[in-house]
Image (tube, rainbow, N blue to C red; front, top):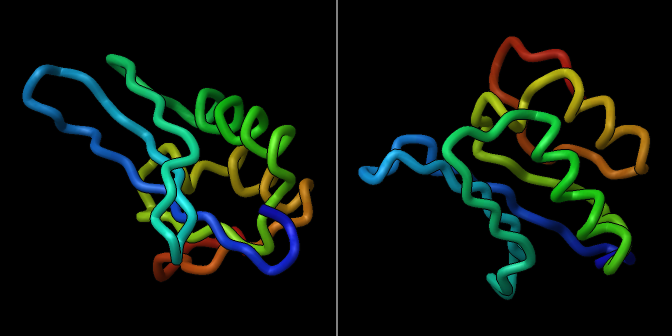
Length: 97
């Protein structure tokens, strides 16, 4: 994924069956990279899923998210900065870059 690529993160936090899903895909090709499904997802589980992905594919240049609570948590923002990726969209009032 390195070298000018991007990843898009999305979440489905209110599924009818009571499960949550976090997905990572290549932004332009829509290739599914990670899908995590659990009853509850938090920032630690998002970082865990992305760490596995980045070990296999390298970090992308930037990460665009739908700003679900599990993606905008300070732990996730700090981790994204630490791996050298940038966030591409930040909701108004948030301080993570």
